[in-house]
Length: 429
Image (cartoon, rainbow, N blue to C red; front, side):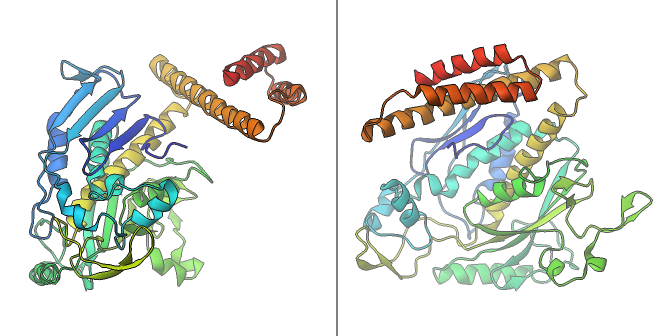
């Protein structure tokens, strides 16, 4: 199944590896006739770029190379493809331990899955691929113009910030002026030891409209959690009051209503998987980056004991660089939810109806493609097990089920049967 897609509505797919030629994004269904936000994208990419001693020394220009979908500075509605070339990768840094499993990396698990692994900087598992997420978010930002997203850092390593403090904007999004110098010393000391630090951040979105998300399997909270866990070092998400909800009785953690409005927001702006219109709030827990220069126990690709000491250019504290990525993923989630709500609200103009139909047609074609892939797998299974390639009884069962369901749904039975027969024909080819 596809696993590199960022959006169920806009058909966004990312590609590329840390030390490959480029990182890229394919935007299959962009909104047409929109100004291409070049300046906004560059500003967002600069926020993600390393800008302190705690960050990697790898410096990429992140220049955009638009392959298709833009004409005279505007999106055309055709597939939008953008590349960002990797220009400062140093693959030779990884040669000394190319046959070793790096602790904390995706090496071992991906090797078990694919039987091959790109050891150069982590390949597809590298944080380098997150530049594509920044691109995607800025291309969707105009769909949520009234929503503001802010992030503060609650904790780095063992040092916590006081939320009662006041601090000017800073690289680490640290809200406590009194402990900020201590934080900088702590990070520098950790770097000198060859170690790294994780942390906890709080993400807040304001002016989120009520009614976003769908119950059960498409909850807004579930989709946000999935988006955040797609970021390599995220290890936990807590909405609203988080852990405190486990120790409170219902009388203290229920969000009660007065004059039609909630007077508290213990659940972070989402109830029943659907946004309430309150401030959306969640905390994210990050593990430290895996790249450290301390010697560690490991094994080689044949699982023989060994030791490893990594070299190269790495972040000792990646929190500042991962914050723009988290905000980008939330932007994509909210834009997706708003667009989905608009397409399914029943309040449409002609362009909206057509957009909804186009999306449904796309989904039908994707299902046809998936059905053909499974039919091919069935053919291979039958061949391997010396079974007859065609099963007329099975085909008759498929048609009978389709006829019964068509009748239940008040659809034209004859027309549905004709479509299903064509479906069987398409899948067979």
